[in-house]
Amino acid sequence: MKSYSSIKTSTFLMVFTLIFNSCSNDSDEIIYDLTGNWKVIYFIDNGNKITKTKQNTWLDYNNGDITANFTEPQNDGKGEISGFKVTNGYSAQFEIKANGKISIGAVFQTFINEPEWTKLYQISQAEYYEVKNSQLLIYYNDKKNVIAFEKK
Image: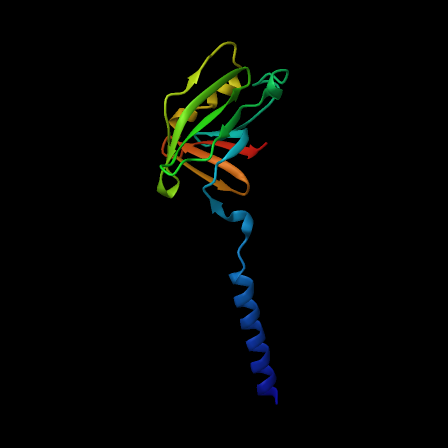
């Protein structure tokens, strides 16, 4: 009888372990849908995380935010991006490819009176992107630099 109880317990533990390990954490799921309105929440510049502060941006203008609106890409992977870099608007064309690759064409913008925060927004250098944990991450400089967005 002891042997049967031991087998039963072992079987239960194996089934429980299999079920527990097979459940994925949806928050770690990576998707490639960048369509929509986003705002920058931080940058990673060569390993340093830089967030918005009242010292590096002007909160009186656009709440100090850098924004991006990505249109839904067409069948050929091409779309448009537009937004504000705190005090100035910008726009460009983008193209997405397989495996999260992205390229952004010439950015049409003005540079009048921008705070330090906007100098880190090097969107035209984008190489890769992914949406992970509800954040759009755009990588450049061989993934050493990141622009992190959240949905507006």
